[in-house]
Length: 290
Ligand code: NAP
Image 1: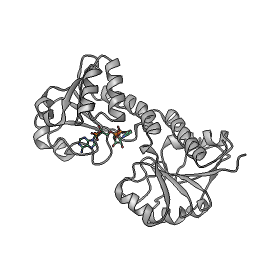
Image 2 (image 1 turned 120 degrees about the vertical axis):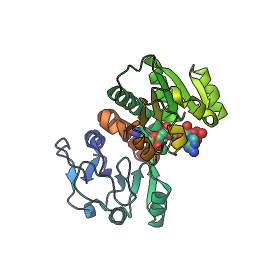
Image 3 (image 1 turned 45 degrees about the vertical axis):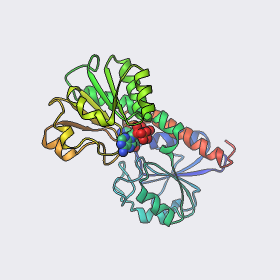
Image 4 (image 1 turned 90 degrees about the vertical axis):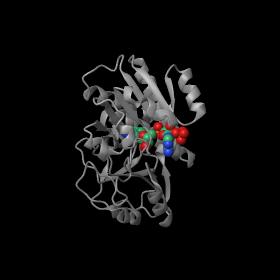
């Protein structure tokens, strides 16, 4: 036992798998807002949020909240309002993710120490692997053609965009990548993809069989959507609001595939291991001897 205790609040299957990894490391684990038969018996399953008040570390779900009103609890019927959560977490260090400005302001207003773990490159890059595999799985499930020899557009060349383009290349797809940075555009050409500057995007939109979006800002408006091939498959990877005018895309009967939280869905054990590495990193940085 190393006297470290961690509370897990809400979350998907990856957090169930994380429980086991933490218990094996001798860390005390409490959970609230997550139910699953695989939660190890050594884990303290709390019946109220009050029971986690003494935990120095709280790991929140991914994403932390979908509406800025309640904590995301896909594996429980419990409703945990953000305000309730803040009362319980007053003295803890909260590891959250996909924390938008409103949530960050709320954490700060309540003087709660927080970190957005998906902003840590070490974590976000590894997390991009199950995300890319999941995106490819969703693309295959939603089309009648192979990815091999298909025309794929990846929007954005950040952590997910880079890894996804690389994996699509391995499958023999013909890849174009959009970016706004001239440095990214040079890298995109260097890797053998077709580089598309954002300002030229509309000129190219009509040729793709698959569009994978990793940009969390709407860049595809009605005019852009009108240029799509009618049988294009659009996979939305980015967090809210995503990259497209969803209402209009639906109106135009575009095959729009929401693909949130892929690591927890397609590879929960791998995703748990990534979270575990993240937690160890943070705990060691805080001086824990692990
Ligand atoms: P990232 O490394 O920050 O990359 C984001 C990309 O979006 C960059 O290429 C960035 O370009 C571009 N971008 C941002 N704002 C833009 C704007 N206003 N106009 C044009 N381009 C813009 O993020 P990431 O780690 O790849 O994650 C991408 C998204 O996927 C995020 O929303 C993240 O939450 C989400 N995500 C989803 C899953 C899932 O399972 N669906 C898993 C992981 C992440 P610049 O570099 O020029 O800023």
